[in-house]
Length: 178
Ligand code: IMP
Image (cartoon, rainbow, N blue to C red; front, side):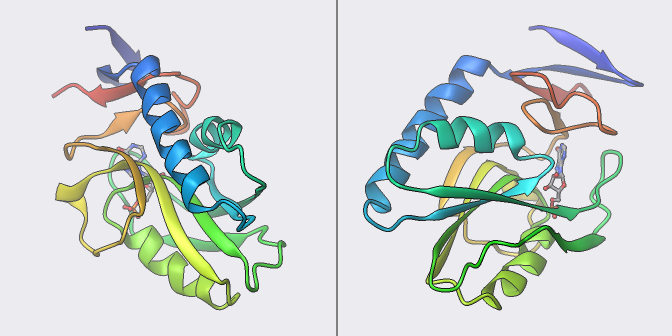
């Protein structure tokens, strides 16, 4: 198993790039079927979801739009619970079918705070597509409509996710070594 060092921590490979891409194809196929004729708007939450959003959106074959917002502040290896306001949401979402693209649901606080905000825009529907879910860490129940992988409660890095802003460029997912 390949190991890498980022700052003071060592990580080992957890999901290969191929496994990630294969699962994204499955999720994209589901969305293509569920949203045919609905012209959904994908709303990608920056920064962590940029790689997942890009790979997922490339496999969307129905008519669809994508837009981006920036939300949470997250530092180090524990969730702070502090969530910033949505920045840059300038697409009119009224009566639109919105699919949120998020990197990971960890405690669930980010989505629990953002979903009511989004509802104020009166979209026709809101669904949530996440790359990762840590069920053991989730404190606020969140309905995840499209989940690529459920993972153990360990810090992960790569494929858009960072450790102190590093490691986002890795095409595979790594897990913190104990
Ligand atoms: P929440 O705890 O569900 O509110 O997650 C907040 C944010 O923390 C996520 O959107 C990620 O950006 C970040 N995050 C949570 N767990 C991890 C992790 O294991 N690695 C890197 N970032 C994480």
